[in-house]
Image 1 (tube, helix red, strand yellow):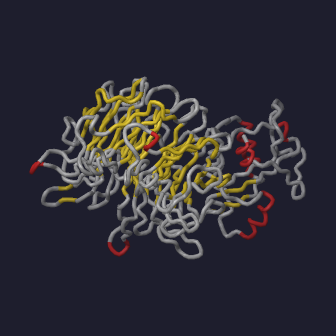
Image 2 (spheres, rainbow, N blue to C red):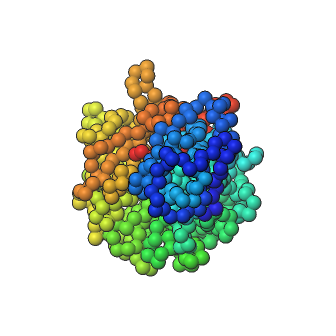
Length: 618
């Protein structure tokens, strides 16, 4: 409620205009009383309402509101009132914001205002955006990771943005996380935005050089209080004398958003299965799900560089379970390839990617674990770095090794075949693409070679999709997507890395999840106009049968309504992280795309300071 009051400031513009008993305001006689409502503020990083006129006089920006839609309450009174409001608007639109002050009659108490949703424009956020905490600096890599959750429980998703190479004073690459909060007025806003790091007062730990806090992020309601909480990976955290052993920092949600109250800091010394060791990078990957169906989200933590029983880079995953007091070390689980099918090998990097989904629809979330550097076969027939995944099932007692699956491109029914350095499992995401109540699994294979032996397209990239069933994911009906599939926009080129990042959401609100696929090294145009490695994102739509190429879309910075942020060489749009949430509460999923290598202009251009593009019409 406090945040909504900050978003909606109610004022009467008596000195400029008084509207008394306006005969043109045709309101039916039977209305209910509502609280005094005289002005509405739509605020991203906007100035105060009483500065609107001055801002309008000095602004060179477009000062018109092109569209204000009433998404709910489409009664005649709503339409008439919206028309009346529109004729009395003084507005300023400065890049990401709009400030609107409609002048309403004195007897406003007799008018029922219907819910309004301002149709937002796509946004570009950086640490140079007005009022955003922090400041854009060279090689910050703002947007390296993005994640969504409703941290203040207001019904609008919020966005967490990792800045793993943020310097804190003279402390290099300590890392930070920026938080932007959602609202019905244009989506994400700078109002009450936050920045979190280990030098914030009241936060556990101390910011140290190369901690890289914010290298991974995931949201979940770990204490079941209705507010999403945020887990932040700190893979470079030193534990005692163990450099880069890694840690995970937990911040809990509240009615005022994320808070340092009750924050937690976990490392491997707190858990069973392994101890903190040099170079483990515990917290390098994260995902959340309710693995035991107790109503509290649980946290899975990857240590992809874990040295397991003398095997360097073998990898490990821990599960930390939620409770009514939050995450607890009680009953935590651990997994390596020693207690699953297959066995650990040098630099397999088990746990490099993680995602959760209920693949067998039994009520408990299951855990998919990527092993992108898995070698298949042995000796002279070995296929190095072909890649594989494990699927570990949830039960009412938590995750279990029973009936675990080990899958790769040479598994029965899975499309294509394992090849050298495909890196199957580099990225993972889950969603119900056919709305059959079984979650499905998308698996990135960014170094998949396409073409023919005589005309190969090296590392063009692909995505395998395995569909859920009562027996978990299966090769039956498996799909193999890439940019040479008929109907998919774009063209497969060498080193595009289609599938390097993945996410899911229902972008068209049809009840079927859609798949967003990052293509970070996509070149735009050709010849002298070519923009090398500008990057792109493909959107593949869900349907009643499965994912389909119909209405596929290719999104780049050249196709967005972002005239001030054009596509540039080596931006790598969609490089490392995609996140989906409903930031403005219109029931359509919105997409946040990290662009960590974006050069942002401050007083002079910064190199690789990074940005995040937010798309509201996907």
